[in-house]
Length: 96
Image (tube, rainbow, N blue to C red; front, top):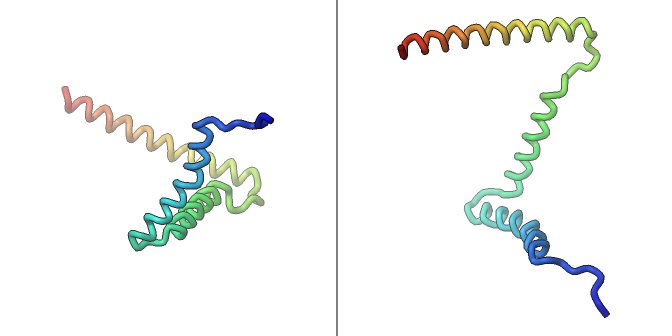
C-alpha cells in the first residue's frame, strides 16, 4: 500500500534544522560557560518590553492632551529638520 504523505528532502532538512539549530545554540552556549536558555529568555523579554514601550502607558488620556502632545512632537521634528537642513547647506558650502 502506498503512503499518503511523502516528505521532500527540503522538508526533512527544514524539520531537522527546526530542532537542531536551537539545541546546538544552547549546547554551544553551555560549552562556552554561558546560560543559553537565559540569553533566549532575555531576548524575548526585551522584545516584549519594546512592544510595551510602544503602547501608550495611560490610555485614559483625553483627546485634547493627545493632540497637544502630537503638536509638540511635530514642532520638535520641524526644528530638527530645519537644523539638519542648515547643517547640510553648511557642509555643501564647505565642499565648494
